[in-house]
Length: 353
Ligand SMILES: Cc1cc2nc3c(=O)[nH]c(=O)nc-3n(C[C@H](O)[C@H](O)[C@H](O)COP(=O)(O)OP(=O)(O)OC[C@H]3O[C@@H](n4cnc5c(N)ncnc54)[C@H](O)[C@@H]3O)c2cc1C
Image 1 (cartoon, rainbow, N blue to C red):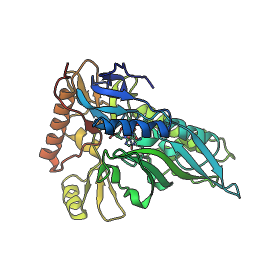
Image 2 (spheres, protein in one colour):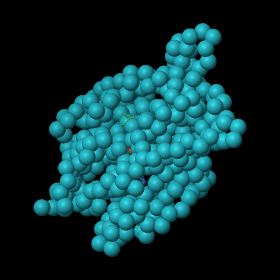
Image 3 (cartoon, helix red, strand yellow):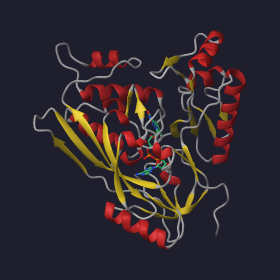
Image 4 (cartoon, protein in one colour):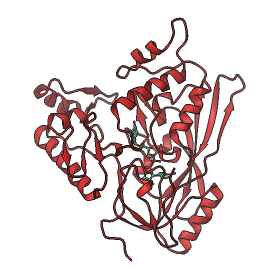
């Protein structure tokens, strides 16, 4: 992970967000332990500074100026504790660990659980914020509990999975605990029992093709199939600035969805357990003729319309204008408002000198 340029009173965050827009914070730190994070929180409180926690910056839209102390946890210890029968294990991982590295270490060691979430950028501490998910698996599926530290007074407590109120790209950390805690560590369960989740897309086909006859599917073969699929569809942020899916797939009540589908029978849709229907936002955007559209330094990705990209040298205002154009176009054509997935942090005001 690249360290930002630092000065005592200003820190560039340009290398800290995968969209690659220029942004500056008042101050920046990378605590190397939970205890150091607590000390820094208490110092910030004493100085009456606003505190903002970031991870890999892969789900953020940074505005030019953050009048805050930005903290990026750099503690990343991980332990795997097998149960007595060796069939399951409890994994404890600290916030700063890279999510993809965690997934690959577990899959390589033959533990089933999060292999479908390979190649999702960012850090473990951010994974609960939007309950990361892909290919039919979500963080919440295997999480036991997580530890949070109050940004008010540095106190810590554990929250169970139920207390985190996870939903589709949603959690308590987007609600009543938004910007109020630092997630310090996660605890979850992995298993030796083969539990491949291959129902999404062509995952089953890819995994079977890569598995020699007579050999069992492994978590690593699933992770590698996910990596291959994602690499074909999604732009690599190291090459082309992006924050993954820019919009959530809208979820409609059954009767609203029925009406929309009567007019657009080819609209890809997924009935949910609660009776609602999830719609493919990428398809809606594509139907508006926006896939591959370019507006100055930003655009809609030409292979995945859900992803907005920054070609470099642009302003965040261009991206926000494009996001608005997409939302309005989809609303005008389908009557559905798309909800933005990445979180916006900071202010448009120029950096004070
Ligand atoms: C190419 C690409 C593909 C992606 N694919 C997926 C996908 O398939 N599924 C998916 O769900 N997401 C996906 N994402 C989005 C993103 O990777 C995830 O949301 C990821 O969890 C964000 O992690 P981060 O460390 O980069 O968080 P950041 O972007 O740094 O932060 C996101 C939010 O979390 C908060 N935060 C970060 N760390 C902490 C912490 N320790 N404690 C408290 N708050 C914290 C920040 O304040 C911010 O509000 C993708 C992004 C990209 C660029």
